[in-house]
Length: 386
Image (cartoon, rainbow, N blue to C red):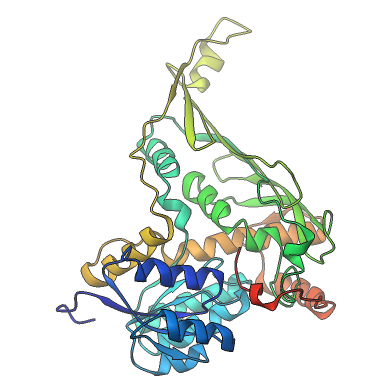
């Protein structure tokens, strides 16, 4: 990009729920270093909306037409999951930078192709992990990186406040199908939490999981997941997710050598020990030691810019070399963990991470072969995220 340019010319591919929301953020002045110059969608009603709502932007039927138009420096891809890789690779090969919605793709080997294309083209590839901008998770990250909590021993995340009714799943023929979406709660709702778990605690090295398909809904993919995680340093983790709990829970607990942090209801509560639990364990003469940890609520800056924050960081990176919210490898790692949980659930076996791509692809192909589309009660809601 030219050093004189003050804005990034951005095209958005896919203007369903998320794509149209990104358009509104930009048009509403939330992303001042972005100029929305193009949009593309296969659906005529969405293109009609874009023609009216996006003044000055060129509107295309197909993402590849947008990429070939030359009117953008970068694209934001908000298309269905299986389209992320081919569209991203096409844009990168055309000399464009890419910000892609989560997940990176359905298969980890597809994400690797995206990364190789970015490296070959010398262009930026990043992902919409907007939960990293949330002040509570940023504060937890700061505390863990500073060493004040010591090494992580255990992480427990119960994230079951994704409740969805059957009508939600019936709203799109692609939804909750192996052929259309590539997965259920793991691939649609949970990429943010899997990314945050890795960002905060590091990449697990193995997983044993149960992925229950159609447990709470008439769908073919998983809507209830329980995973036991193993980390290289010996730490362990439990990850539970569902779209069938009402009311649900969103509680993240990270136990460390010098205390623990619990994130729930928009705040982080902290218990801090006066010394490491490892020292207490082997030096205390008290068999029933409890101690009196210091209890507090973490102070944050209160900022949570979400999608606008990611888009603004993307623009700042392209214009001034500042750091994006998430890098290309982050998208790959999240998908490697997701693929491993799926494969463990499918096979009933403990899986080391990353799993062999050919094994995952073979098992996914079996499910795609038996996948069935379902009736759609209102096609206007047949979008790629949410």
